[in-house]
Image (cartoon, rainbow, N blue to C red; front, side, top):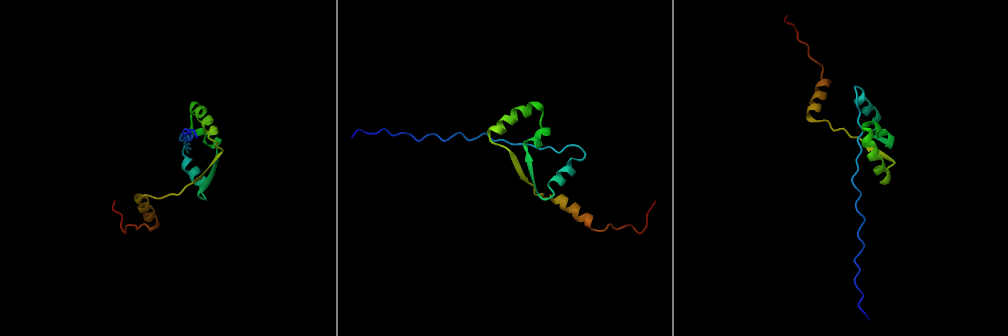
Length: 105
């Protein structure tokens, strides 16, 4: 019987390029909006929720890549881990402030 040439296995498909989205909470109310949206620790975002965080040119380049990757929505979980400094600040707020018995002028 003639020898059958070995056929190399097909190459795996290329890994998709890593995509990331940024949601910017800007302005004086930005932090408040972030806290309100993640009140229960999780928030679902559609593609349009990210629009204001990009320039028009960035958005035109990003949207086709996201659609090609099959992006429809992102479910984001937020867990806040206060820094040591923040823990000290929060602990200090819970203690009643002691007032001086005498004010020097």
